[in-house]
Image (cartoon, rainbow, N blue to C red; front, top):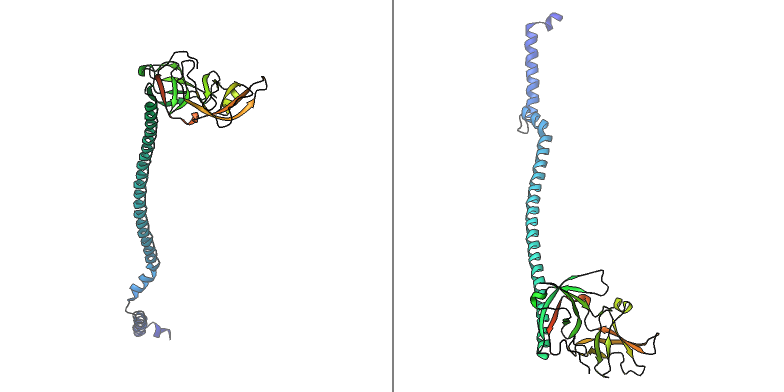
Length: 284
């Protein structure tokens, strides 16, 4: 029996059977038009192909998003540049508007007081530790400004020049207790002077002390410079009376005055370099 399996004829038969079986397998695999080798390779590389396709999609999406982000970034830069340009223009517009307002005030004052020699100046510095709101202006002796020149905004008294350099000057305001100005009430025609103290200065107010108990000055009265003393011209507005109070240390009363301009907010002022009666001591 063993000799049959070892015989040459049996080996040939076995090879034929094996060939037929392989042919059947190949034919089965080839039914869908795909070769066995292609099917095997396809099965082996299918995950790789799917991953490659996924990577390609992600890469393409990233490229699109990257291009979009770059476009948006560029547009944002353009818009920021435009906003910055408009902000500069807005600042220039506001500065021009302020200048126009200042010159309108200048013309009004000059028209009503042709004897005034005025010099416009910008406030360039303030001392935050100074409770009396003094400030430095952009003009000095080179512009003809001198100590004791009155400083105004429109028709309102702001203060007086206290020291001068070539191109700057320091202004002491009416909120400084060291400053006194001859004054009168335009309604009752009562005369006196305006000064202040630390308590009122902290509230940005002045006072007209030494008034009689029978005074006609009341809340709402307008107080102006009297021109007495020769430092300030007559009829500059100092402020409006807030209230009239009894002086606890004397038998007199005093008027609390709110200045006509908010000194802390000023940016431009005028210096009166000359006026009729400057330096002349007069009485009314």
